[in-house]
Structure formats: structure tokens, C-alpha cells
Length: 187
Image (cartoon, rainbow, N blue to C red; front, side, top):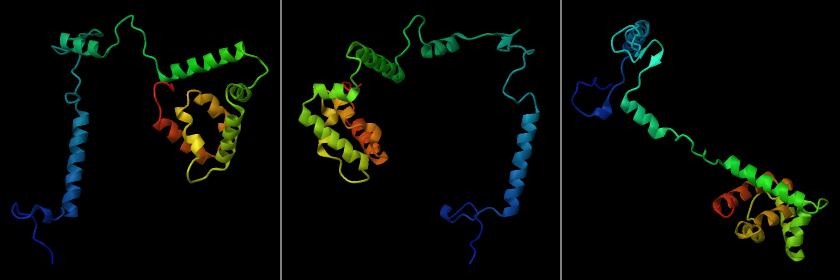
């Protein structure tokens, strides 16, 4: 049983859709109005340069005091130092590491340098954690790995696990772990 068309009274939830012919006519009328509006030069939203009160004359833009104040609110003051981005911080850290590597003994690699600062048993544990993470697919991460973000020398300990050999699943879980425990000391 078909309901009567909406007459302005009753339950608005029982609205019948527009008849197809009416919706096509409405679409055609709106497209024609849009085409007429785009054809007229007066309705394009930009005042002509030859009229009175134009915002620019002869290629020079006249800015009101209110517009200038709004622009100044968002502009960086002259002579100010540009803000440091994350890329700047990372590049500075890389330079520091390279300089520290050049100042140290040249023949030693990162794993050996990290191992010299860390107890031998601890280094063996984290190398074992690295082997586990190279085969990791799902489940719980090793407890020894979960404490790495809270260690003072977390970068050296992390280097012992050989992150370049981890499985993609382990890399994802490690990223989640480090992001959730990120603090200003780690940056």
C-alpha cells in the first residue's frame, strides 16, 4: 500500500521520495542556473578594476588596517628565529652521532661500541631478544624488550637487538611500544 505524498502535516519520517521526473527537472534547472551564474562577469565575486572602490588600482593592492592587523597576527615577526622542526632535531642527532663516531676509535662498529658500555650478560640477552624479534609474528613481546624504552641507554640496547633484521610484525609492535612511552628525554 503506497502512502499519500507529504502534505505538510503528519510524521516527517514517512516522507515519500520525489518522483524521478521532478528530480531530473530540478537537476536541469540548477545546472542551468549555475551555468548562467558562471557566464556573467558581474557575479564572479571579483570586482572589476575599472569601477569605483576597487581594492586595487594599477596593479597595487590597497590593504585596510583590519586586514593588515589580521595578517600581522599570523605572520612571523621579522628577525625571529625559525621554529625547529622534527627533521632539524633528527639531523642534529645524526651529526652528533657521526662526530662521536669520528672522535672514538675508527675500527669499532656500533654494536661493539654499545656492548662495551653494557654488561656482557645483558648484551647476550638483548642479542637473543633480537633473534626472537627476527621471527616474531604475533603474541607477547619478550619482557626484556618491553623495558628498553625506560632505559637510560635505550639506543645502545636497541642497537644490540639488530632492528634491521626484525620481522615487519616486530617492527610494528616496537614502534607502538616506543611511541606510547615517548618522553622528552628520548628525543
